[in-house]
Image (cartoon, rainbow, N blue to C red; front, top):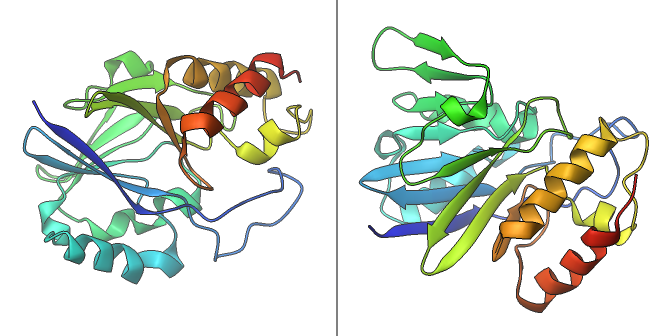
Length: 211
Protein backbone atom coordinates (compact mmCIF):
# COMPACT_ATOMS: atom_id res chain seq x y z
CA UNK A 1 0.00 0.00 0.00
CA UNK A 2 1.48 3.34 -1.07
CA UNK A 3 1.13 6.23 1.36
CA UNK A 4 2.42 9.70 0.60
CA UNK A 5 2.96 12.63 2.94
CA UNK A 6 3.14 16.20 1.61
CA UNK A 7 3.66 19.44 3.49
CA UNK A 8 1.11 21.91 2.10
CA UNK A 9 2.59 24.73 4.14
CA UNK A 10 5.26 24.97 6.81
CA UNK A 11 4.07 26.15 10.20
CA UNK A 12 5.06 29.67 11.13
CA UNK A 13 7.78 29.83 13.76
CA UNK A 14 6.78 30.39 17.37
CA UNK A 15 9.77 31.05 19.60
CA UNK A 16 7.94 31.86 22.81
CA UNK A 17 6.09 29.51 25.12
CA UNK A 18 2.37 29.22 25.74
CA UNK A 19 1.25 31.51 28.53
CA UNK A 20 4.03 34.03 27.92
CA UNK A 21 2.79 35.71 24.74
CA UNK A 22 -0.44 36.29 22.86
CA UNK A 23 -0.26 34.41 19.58
CA UNK A 24 -1.42 36.58 16.68
CA UNK A 25 -3.82 35.57 13.92
CA UNK A 26 -0.81 35.35 11.61
CA UNK A 27 0.38 32.30 13.55
CA UNK A 28 -0.39 29.10 11.63
CA UNK A 29 0.41 25.44 12.11
CA UNK A 30 1.95 23.15 9.54
CA UNK A 31 -0.71 21.80 7.15
CA UNK A 32 -0.04 18.24 6.01
CA UNK A 33 -1.69 16.13 3.29
CA UNK A 34 -1.64 12.33 3.53
CA UNK A 35 -2.87 10.12 0.71
CA UNK A 36 -3.55 6.59 1.93
CA UNK A 37 -5.80 3.75 0.72
CA UNK A 38 -7.90 6.10 -1.38
CA UNK A 39 -8.29 8.57 1.47
CA UNK A 40 -7.18 12.19 1.28
CA UNK A 41 -6.33 13.27 4.82
CA UNK A 42 -5.37 16.71 6.07
CA UNK A 43 -3.66 17.04 9.43
CA UNK A 44 -4.22 20.43 11.09
CA UNK A 45 -5.79 22.63 8.36
CA UNK A 46 -4.32 25.76 9.95
CA UNK A 47 -5.34 29.28 10.89
CA UNK A 48 -7.91 31.68 9.43
CA UNK A 49 -5.52 33.97 7.55
CA UNK A 50 -4.12 31.03 5.60
CA UNK A 51 -7.30 29.53 4.14
CA UNK A 52 -6.62 30.77 0.60
CA UNK A 53 -3.06 29.47 0.72
CA UNK A 54 -4.24 26.02 1.82
CA UNK A 55 -6.87 25.92 -0.94
CA UNK A 56 -4.29 26.96 -3.55
CA UNK A 57 -1.91 24.25 -2.37
CA UNK A 58 -4.65 21.67 -2.78
CA UNK A 59 -5.60 23.03 -6.23
CA UNK A 60 -1.96 22.70 -7.32
CA UNK A 61 -2.23 19.00 -6.45
CA UNK A 62 -5.49 18.54 -8.35
CA UNK A 63 -7.66 18.40 -5.22
CA UNK A 64 -10.82 20.25 -4.19
CA UNK A 65 -12.18 20.65 -0.68
CA UNK A 66 -14.75 17.93 -1.33
CA UNK A 67 -11.92 15.51 -2.18
CA UNK A 68 -10.70 15.67 1.43
CA UNK A 69 -12.59 13.03 3.39
CA UNK A 70 -10.67 13.04 6.69
CA UNK A 71 -9.41 15.88 8.88
CA UNK A 72 -7.18 15.21 11.90
CA UNK A 73 -6.57 17.81 14.60
CA UNK A 74 -3.51 17.06 16.72
CA UNK A 75 -5.00 19.33 19.39
CA UNK A 76 -7.60 22.02 19.67
CA UNK A 77 -5.68 25.30 19.37
CA UNK A 78 -7.10 27.62 16.71
CA UNK A 79 -3.86 28.02 14.74
CA UNK A 80 -4.26 24.29 13.96
CA UNK A 81 -8.04 23.88 13.71
CA UNK A 82 -9.70 27.05 12.40
CA UNK A 83 -9.78 25.92 8.76
CA UNK A 84 -11.64 22.71 9.59
CA UNK A 85 -14.74 24.55 8.35
CA UNK A 86 -13.42 24.45 4.77
CA UNK A 87 -13.94 20.68 4.57
CA UNK A 88 -17.65 20.21 5.11
CA UNK A 89 -17.73 16.61 3.82
CA UNK A 90 -14.82 15.33 5.92
CA UNK A 91 -14.90 13.20 9.05
CA UNK A 92 -13.04 15.15 11.76
CA UNK A 93 -10.78 13.30 14.19
CA UNK A 94 -9.64 15.06 17.38
CA UNK A 95 -7.77 13.77 20.45
CA UNK A 96 -11.10 13.05 22.18
CA UNK A 97 -13.73 12.42 19.51
CA UNK A 98 -14.71 11.70 15.92
CA UNK A 99 -17.28 13.89 14.18
CA UNK A 100 -19.11 12.12 11.37
CA UNK A 101 -20.43 14.80 9.04
CA UNK A 102 -22.13 12.40 6.63
CA UNK A 103 -24.81 10.96 8.92
CA UNK A 104 -26.43 13.74 10.87
CA UNK A 105 -23.36 15.17 12.56
CA UNK A 106 -22.98 12.21 14.92
CA UNK A 107 -20.11 12.59 17.41
CA UNK A 108 -18.37 9.58 18.92
CA UNK A 109 -16.40 10.24 22.11
CA UNK A 110 -13.57 8.03 23.40
CA UNK A 111 -11.18 8.08 26.33
CA UNK A 112 -8.01 6.55 24.88
CA UNK A 113 -6.16 7.32 21.65
CA UNK A 114 -5.77 3.59 20.97
CA UNK A 115 -9.47 3.71 20.06
CA UNK A 116 -8.78 6.28 17.33
CA UNK A 117 -8.42 4.30 14.11
CA UNK A 118 -7.33 6.18 10.98
CA UNK A 119 -6.51 4.18 7.82
CA UNK A 120 -2.75 3.77 7.25
CA UNK A 121 -1.81 5.80 10.34
CA UNK A 122 -0.64 5.01 13.85
CA UNK A 123 -1.93 7.47 16.44
CA UNK A 124 0.09 8.06 19.62
CA UNK A 125 -0.65 10.02 22.78
CA UNK A 126 1.69 13.02 23.03
CA UNK A 127 0.18 14.99 25.90
CA UNK A 128 2.00 17.93 27.46
CA UNK A 129 1.46 20.89 25.19
CA UNK A 130 -2.18 20.26 26.04
CA UNK A 131 -3.72 17.59 28.21
CA UNK A 132 -5.17 16.02 25.06
CA UNK A 133 -2.72 15.97 22.15
CA UNK A 134 -1.98 13.34 19.54
CA UNK A 135 0.75 12.80 16.96
CA UNK A 136 0.61 10.62 13.86
CA UNK A 137 3.14 8.07 12.63
CA UNK A 138 3.05 7.39 8.89
CA UNK A 139 5.20 4.80 7.10
CA UNK A 140 5.98 6.35 3.70
CA UNK A 141 8.67 5.53 1.12
CA UNK A 142 10.69 3.54 3.63
CA UNK A 143 10.63 6.29 6.27
CA UNK A 144 8.75 6.69 9.51
CA UNK A 145 7.36 10.21 9.45
CA UNK A 146 5.91 11.69 12.64
CA UNK A 147 3.44 14.54 12.26
CA UNK A 148 3.99 15.98 15.69
CA UNK A 149 1.71 18.98 16.04
CA UNK A 150 3.05 21.03 18.94
CA UNK A 151 4.55 18.04 20.75
CA UNK A 152 7.92 19.03 19.24
CA UNK A 153 9.17 22.60 19.26
CA UNK A 154 12.74 23.33 18.21
CA UNK A 155 12.98 26.51 20.26
CA UNK A 156 12.55 24.41 23.40
CA UNK A 157 15.14 21.87 22.26
CA UNK A 158 17.67 24.57 21.41
CA UNK A 159 17.06 26.12 24.82
CA UNK A 160 18.08 22.72 26.23
CA UNK A 161 15.34 22.77 28.86
CA UNK A 162 11.57 22.50 28.95
CA UNK A 163 10.45 25.63 30.84
CA UNK A 164 8.51 24.99 34.04
CA UNK A 165 5.88 27.46 32.80
CA UNK A 166 5.12 25.19 29.85
CA UNK A 167 1.82 23.32 30.33
CA UNK A 168 2.63 19.97 31.97
CA UNK A 169 6.35 20.16 31.26
CA UNK A 170 7.13 16.60 32.41
CA UNK A 171 4.53 15.09 30.09
CA UNK A 172 5.72 17.34 27.26
CA UNK A 173 9.30 16.10 27.63
CA UNK A 174 8.13 12.48 27.79
CA UNK A 175 6.14 12.91 24.58
CA UNK A 176 8.99 14.63 22.75
CA UNK A 177 11.42 11.85 23.71
CA UNK A 178 8.86 9.29 22.48
CA UNK A 179 8.70 10.98 19.07
CA UNK A 180 12.46 11.29 18.60
CA UNK A 181 12.89 7.64 19.55
CA UNK A 182 10.87 6.43 16.54
CA UNK A 183 11.07 9.15 13.86
CA UNK A 184 13.08 9.21 10.63
CA UNK A 185 11.51 12.60 9.92
CA UNK A 186 9.46 14.94 12.10
CA UNK A 187 6.97 17.49 10.81
CA UNK A 188 6.54 19.90 13.73
CA UNK A 189 3.58 22.22 14.11
CA UNK A 190 5.90 25.21 13.71
CA UNK A 191 9.18 25.48 11.81
CA UNK A 192 10.87 23.33 9.14
CA UNK A 193 10.83 19.55 8.81
CA UNK A 194 13.37 17.89 11.08
CA UNK A 195 15.38 15.25 9.23
CA UNK A 196 18.87 14.06 8.30
CA UNK A 197 21.79 15.44 10.29
CA UNK A 198 19.57 17.98 11.99
CA UNK A 199 17.38 15.19 13.33
CA UNK A 200 20.45 13.40 14.71
CA UNK A 201 21.75 16.56 16.36
CA UNK A 202 18.44 17.46 17.97
CA UNK A 203 17.88 13.86 19.05
CA UNK A 204 21.09 13.97 21.09
CA UNK A 205 19.96 17.19 22.77
CA UNK A 206 16.51 15.76 23.50
CA UNK A 207 18.06 12.75 25.23
CA UNK A 208 19.64 15.11 27.76
CA UNK A 209 16.74 17.53 28.15
CA UNK A 210 15.33 18.21 31.59
CA UNK A 211 12.39 20.16 32.94
